[in-house]
Amino acid sequence: MVEDKKEWAQFFKQMFKEGEKFTEDLLKENERLRQRNAFLEHELSLRSASGRSDSSQLLTRLEVLEEERNRLKEELSSLKRRLKQVEKENADFTLQYLEIEKQNSNFASLYVASYQLHSTIDFNKILKVISDILTNLIGAEYFGIYLYDPRSSTLVLTSVEGLDEPKGSRVELRDNLMSRVASSGELYIDPEIPEPGNYARPIALQPLISSGDLVGMLAIHKLLVQKEGFEPIDMELFSLLGAHAGTALLAARICSEVQAAGT
Image 1 (spheres, helix red, strand yellow):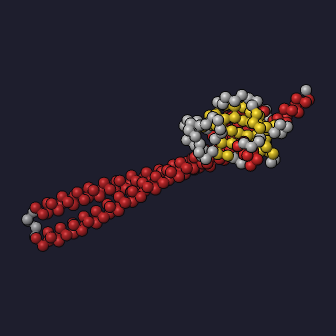
Image 2 (cartoon, helix red, strand yellow):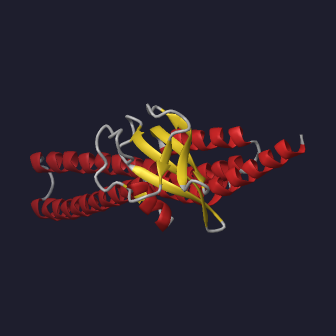
Image 3 (cartoon, one colour):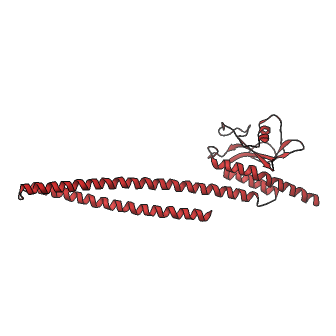
């Protein structure tokens, strides 16, 4: 991925360099034509003021100079149009480069998030990784991480950031929003995200699934002040968390139970 990024960067740098050289050549040619045009105008002026040349020859010469002048004007106009076209192409290439840079950055974020989720089997470290992804990559300020307790059919608040709810608080999966989202297994986004956030209700819910079974739930209540809303890359991160965070938490929890049983 890094090599591809370097190759793209080198490609666009070479392209911009060639565009700059072409632009400089156009500007030099433009200046030459301006000087040539000024010289011809000066010569026309001198010829018009002089009465020593034959009138018919002078007229012919003036006509030739006028034709040359018109030709140079047309050539100059053509070069100006080409210069504008090159400037537009450079601007388009710049936008394409920025878009590729953004895509590379998004791919890097997804790779880092996926790697971190599977880099440890320590339960608390995985919770910390999920919190970091929610804060640093998605831009959540207030959120909760819930784990599903199948014995009581409740979601237990295991990690919390910015909310008044204490750890260990439970949400019963009855006729409520969390229950419906858990049953669907799909990401829920509030269609009208309140500003700066409604602490009484989540603005996003992401079920954590492993092998088709509910493991937990991510609930975001407020975004960071610089975050205006969810972006396409956030949808990819939610999808990644829904598929991988649940498996990582389940594996870590089973490992902890096995270790506890062996002591």
